[in-house]
Length: 412
RNA sequence: GGGCGGGUACCGAAGUGGUCAAACGGGGCUGACUGUAAAUCAGCUGGCGUCGCCUACAGAGGUUCGAAUCCUCUCCCGCCCA
Image 1: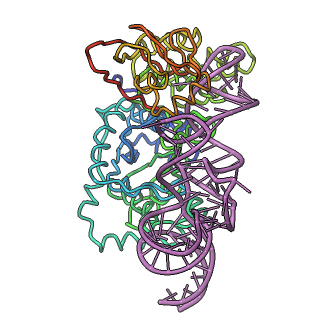
Image 2: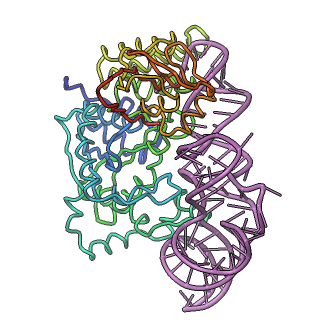
Image 3: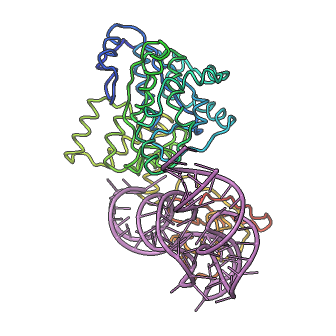
C-alpha cells in the first residue's frame, strides 16, 4: 500500500462516526499531533469476516494514513465466550482449535483493507494466557452486577426469562482489560459496542491508567435491508466470497440501502456520494444502475476491477437476459430414460425424491427448454443437456455408458 | 434446599388423548411479474415404493384400540423463596 498521507484533523478523522466520548478530549489530542494507539478488537468467532466488519476497518485505515497506530486485538479468549452484544441467547462455545483456525484466516482478510505494514497485532492470550484467579477477581471487582445488567441486551434477556451465563457478564470486563494491556488511547467499534467500549474507560481508570476515548461507526444493514449484517442472520456478504457471489448478493440489496452502502463500504468520496444520492432521489439515475455501480466498487476492492466487471457482465447475462452462466458444472449419468425424480437426485440437484417431486409440481424444473412436470414418466436426455431448477441451480448432463454415475451433491 | 413454569419442525410459537407431519409468524425454496438473487402476489417447506407407509413433538419406560397431548423416572432451562 502506498503514501504516507499528511496528518488529518479531527473533522476528517471523525467523519462518519456516530458516538464519540470524550469528543472534546479526543479532538484536542488529534490536533496536538500525537500519534495515538487506536484499538480495534476482533473476535475470531467465525472463519470469515463480512462487509459489516469492514466499516470500522475503513476508519482504521484512515487513521492509519494519518499517522496513528492501529492496534488489532485478536480476541482469542473472548471469542470463546461470544460477545453478548445484541444477542438474545448465549452463543455456542467455541473450542480453542476453532478459534485458532479462525484467527489465522482473519488477519489475512483484515489486511485486504488495513495496511499490514503499520499495525500492531496483539492476542489476548498474551495477557490472559496465565491470568490467575487473583487477577480475575481483581478485574471483577471493577464493576457491579447492576452496572453490567444495565446493558439493553442483558436487561431484555432477563425480562424474557432467558439465560445469561455468568461468563457473559465478564465479557465487557475482559474487553476492557485489553485496553489496559495495550494502553489504548482510543477504541473503535460498531455502535452496538458502545457499552463494552465505555467499560474499557472504567477498567482503565480502575487500573490507574488514563481513560481511552471511544469512537463508534454505524452498523451496516444486511442484505435483508432490516437487521444488522451478520453471518448467523444469513444476510451477509463475506469478503472472501467469489466475485460473482458478492455481486449477486449486492444486487439483491433493497434500493433504500444503495446510498448507505456506497458511503460505508466503498471508497467513494463524500461529495460524490451526495451527488449520486441527489440524482437517485430526483430520478435522474436508475436505481439498478446505481446499485450496479456500488456492487462493482465493493467487489473491486476484494477481487480487482476486472473481476468486478466480469461479475457484472455475468450477472446481466444470467438474470437480465435469462441466459446460461459461462461455467456450468457437469455431472455424469448413465445413459437412458430416467424418472425425472431420479434424474434430479442423480444429478445432485435435489436432496431427496420428495423435494424433487415438489419442484416438479411447482414447475421449477427444466431440461433444456422443456419444462418437466410431475406427470412425466421417463425422460430421455442427451449428452450436454442442461437440467435446471429455478435460475440458480443447474448442471450439464454428460452421459457415460461405461462409467458409473458420480453425482456431485448439490447444496439444497 | 423448597415451590412453580417450561423443553414442539431451520427459528419463534400454538396445540394438552384420535380429524397432528403438527395452527400461526419469520426464514428458506419455487412460480408469476420485473430493473435484479428487489418489491408485490401465489404455492411449497420430514422421508419413501406418494391418495398408502415410515420416522418425528428433550430422553427412557408405561397406560390406552389410539399419545406431542395422561403416568413414572432421567436430562436440560427459567422464575420465586431460602
